[in-house]
Length: 118
Image (cartoon, rainbow, N blue to C red; front, side, top):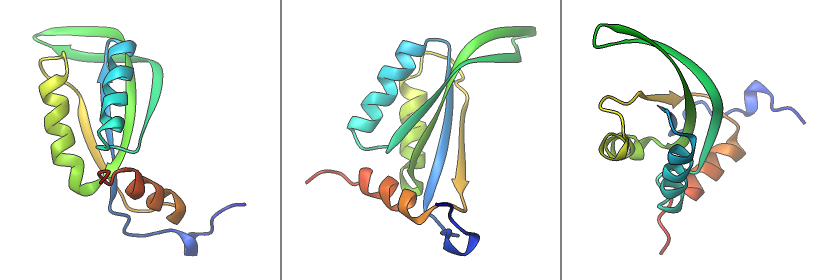
């Protein structure tokens, strides 16, 4: 069953936070911890990705992993701070994108999974 445009939530209150790393096991463990702490509802890992970038004057061409974390907008700043604190990179790739349109059921699920347990 497809969701029609009229059924989408236009202001969702959720975001996708994208993070890359060179160690798939570290990233999987880190994202599992974030989910256990309810800072995000899920972590969708993409492996491998090829990253080409300039770092300290050299062109790097490396294999990395990427994860998309789904969370509440109000947790984005805390999530970014946590990633910068725990990530092994000196300057990790951390991008947060506000989700403007989404399925109501998915938005409800993300919001319910990011409520601290009583």
